[in-house]
Image (cartoon, rainbow, N blue to C red):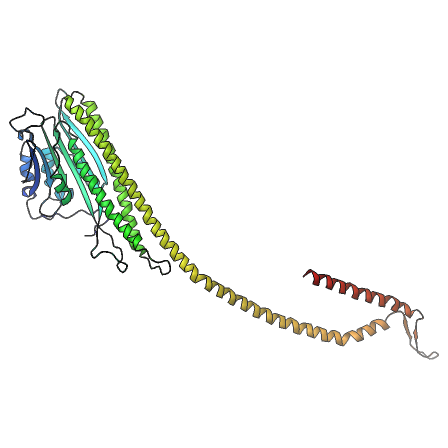
Length: 442
């Protein structure tokens, strides 16, 4: 079954049945012996805990009935929302003084919380101590058939919404209500060790031990999917990754880290309340104080285990992020390999078009230079002759009635050649020298 990430509430499967008469499993400890049975919530609420005692109360814990009620019916694992929708929670609240906050939508949508309260008589002596807490676990369901290279990795999952309410009468009775337990956790609780009725937190250690085991199973289920993704890593030469599936898996691992972080906070709050309880009730029997120290040590050990699971979950996030980065790099590298030849071809085509344009411009320039050269060749001799004869070395006098026209050349005409020839030679020598220098430099 694939659950919605926003934790939708499950519909009550027994909406047509009087929920108060539905039989739920329970286990009970009497004289160190565990017995199992079924009891309706209405009957459970009608019983008086004070009367559930054995005749012999001489020994420690002797004759004490510790009822551990597991709210489950057939194969369905009802959560708090089911009881709320059928109004059964009102009977439980009235009988066991369960706070309204425990049933609220805010509490049921939370990743975890812990709260407690006590009742005292007019003398200030403790009459009753109760606690309520919640854990949220997200577990992957292994797909069938097993994953292979041709099968995409699809994450199917289920949310475990674990709710607990405990009530304790000093050195007399204790009752625990468990909501939304999976079948595996319910079975494991049937094999719990002896409870110490002198410490109201002794059964918390047992419950949390089982919850930590469920967190571990859930975390390994996500680890297996991430490992499958690593083993079925797509070749960089032909990458066709399923981005949606990979990001869905990343979302699930983030949820896993979130629930584990909240479990740590819940445990921290629980340990603090445990310390406050025994500070405020220092007149409890010596055995209760001794057991409280042992319980505190167990809590600290469990916090260490939760820290370990949290760090493993964060490492799982980083491993999956590495896979996503690897796929992105492979896709980018593949695109670059395809783009570079196309880029070179585009540049070459552009250069070729530029070369053609340059060639056409050169042809136009060459035609213009040829035209200029032809015009210069045509007009230069005449221009030179005109310039030469227009100098003062030549003199033309038109004739008149008395004198005929006359053309004369100056005796100093040789000066022109003396100046023009050396200057021409000097210019040719300078150009030749410059040309040789620039050619040697290249």
